[in-house]
Length: 268
Ligand code: ACM
Image (tube, rainbow, N blue to C red; front, top):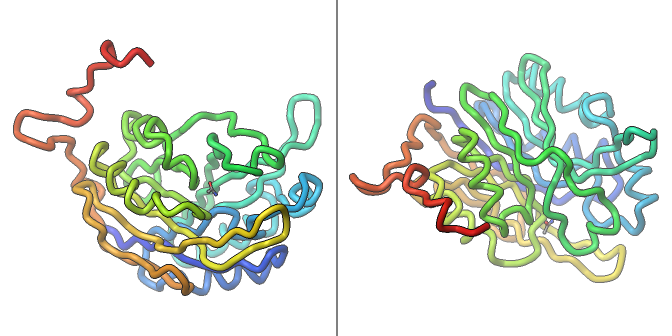
């Protein structure tokens, strides 16, 4: 495939204003980009006061109103969109469950979803942990892996996606700890993949503690170069031209980051 323009969209959602948050986020997608990643829970805001509140604001994928707006936008603009949202689903017994999910919408109307595996802090009271592992999906001419925010702390997430063939990690986030932007450089280097981390900015204080989101949305190359970056306070977009074919695993003439693994030595 050829190179494509990717964007990490950095927003400051207003809690509960789903249609406004969606409209403001989509308005920041650059005209010429083929892939846009929006932050975690970008439709609702982050800090639900209770599980009931999360259920009330969550929506089914892809039938919910925000999903419909994302699907229409992807088709109209010939852009693949990845967006974090609260997903309402039912288990086998018909009970409601809410997942912290990332949905991917292709220009042809098809879609895919990832449900966050590693829940952060009070998310454990609100969301069910992801029940589908770390699947990869064909999108924008390559193989895309989805992970959400705190998944950065677990190298197994990005490694699982790289081993499954992902060349490009789409990473919606609502980061509050300072470490992820640097850590994603290592995730990209150790797996030789691109990563688009879309974080939010602003402050929420609706539940136990105030949360201040660090922004710094970025696009990182397989060589660990930060290709584009937002600041820590303003809404905006980090935009870069990337070539997902340029993800060979050879880090020295005699070292391949995947083939040189020695799983028998790891005792996982
Ligand atoms: C996080 O996972 N939202 C920090």
